[in-house]
Image (cartoon, rainbow, N blue to C red; front, top):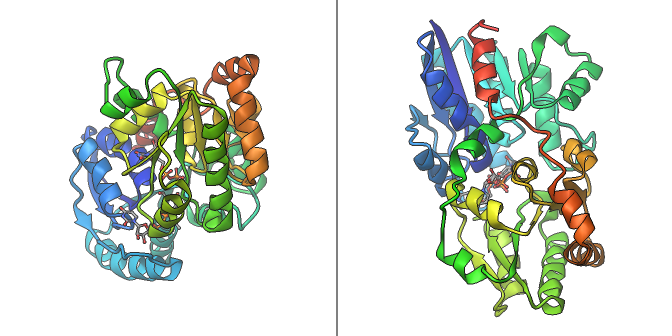
Amino acid sequence: MKNIMLVFGTRPEAIKMCPLVIELRGRKEANVCVCVTGQHKSMLKQVLDAFSIKPDYDLSIMKEKQTLFDITVSIINEIRVVLEKERPDVVLVHGDTSTAFACALACFYMQIPVGHVEAGLRTYDIYSPFPEEFNRQAIGIIATYHFAPTEKARENLKNEGKQPSTIFVTGNTGIDALKTTVRGDYSHELLKWASGSRLILLTSHRRENLGEPMRQIFRAVKRITKTHPDVKVIYPVHLNPLVREIAGSVFEGEERIRLIEPLDVIDFHNFLARATIILTDSGGIQEEAPSLGKPVLVLRKSTERPEGVESGALMLVGIEEERIYDCVSNLLEDRELYARMSSAGNPYGDGKASRRIADIILGKN
Ligand code: UD1
Ligand code: UDP
């Protein structure tokens, strides 16, 4: 019997770790413990409810407008107690959040092996995304197992000198989640509001975009609705009050732009499946949209998901109003470009990543 602890704390980690929790809980050789840090509160609960997962521990560390110091210090202190009590054989963390970094560091201090799910993504620009690029590189130093979603991620890890025998290409568990959520018969009031129009689904929350870059992004989107009367925009606004202030001020009074509360993951995936274009600075959405055949314009200076850019499903458009406006207009007007981007395919996995990771941890591969 292997004692396996999974630790996560934000919405995207939860979406990508819940399929693994379910897979491991179905294995008789695994004794599974789920610890959530509560770095996110309601956005985390939405995911746990959608997957019907009850955590064994909830550190409940979230504060309004929390700083990186708040998150890191609280988690390191609180998780120590849980690790001392449970003494897991291995701890699984995901991706690049402060939850994942602080938990990996605590494990390192206690010499508990760490498995890194979604390992090897890199921009090699430590400030973009911030602080995530640092977090994932740091976790990479600590981890015993590196579960890389793609060959490119494996190459990054190999080039950094990780032992090839510790790196496993598994696909991304986010695609596992997506396979369970999208339904042909899905309907929603807001999709009825958007029917007959071309729907742009927008999300933006990155720390490095807060302030002027986010204002520029939103102004570009507003201009698009002025020049394209058949376009409507739905924007589920992240609960970060700094994001909400900017979104509220730029979009106030715009009839064809709906600012809504964060959607639960089942709703969001079905909205993705029905949108015309996705505009986002999110990481996970860059992986999900291509498997639904939706073009993504990435609102960032760099991306750690170059596979989608190379395949043609993603276009890196940056954070300047003029360029974003031009790229969205172009994609709305150029049918060939639209057809190319939406048929580029999905390089991020086949929906079986959790199974592979469970096999590796339990020594069955
Ligand atoms: C975090 C991750 C980021 C990830 C994002 C996913 C870090 C450093 N950043 O950023 O990598 O892309 O989550 O969304 O780990 N809030 C609520 N309720 C919630 C969630 C958030 O009120 O359920 C508000 C709080 O005021 C909180 C703020 O949002 O202080 C920001 O949350 P935080 O986790 O610090 O940063 P994110 O930008 O969400
Ligand atoms: N998502 C969601 N509801 C929303 C917006 C996004 O469930 O209203 C999901 C989305 O499908 C993806 C994940 O949240 O799986 C992405 O999270 P986010 O953009 O917050 O973080 P990132 O991926 O950038 O770390």
